[in-house]
Length: 167
Image 1 (tube, rainbow, N blue to C red):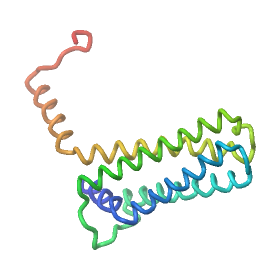
Image 2: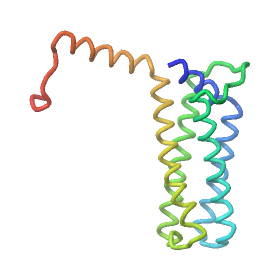
Image 3: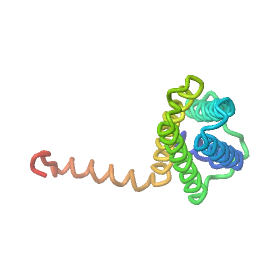
């Protein structure tokens, strides 16, 4: 739980919020480019740019979790509002990327060799954003989750366990 809180405090900073907002801006520009079906080279450039940014973002998260990178020493503790804003931004990014993927599929851009790979990577990144949002939300509600597991352990200790077919 301490690692999760360290990551959470790092991710809820102004830098984190600026990176998320910049990614949302890129996603909006990308969405416009996909809808117009114009400028395949520009679209390809934007896709590679956003995929690179997202890859670095998730590498930073992995480095924080594995201990390869330490957070800044002067971090303020994350507030529930800040965590909720981060979760909302992550979900919005994932939704935007899914929408871009679907629009590109409908416009048959997945047949274009310049665009197909980066578009598929966007879909993968969307799932990663949803997973990270879910993880942060679980951390935010950590006490509730711990109470649920404690109650389940107590029920098991008392023998209040039923076969799945009886439920």
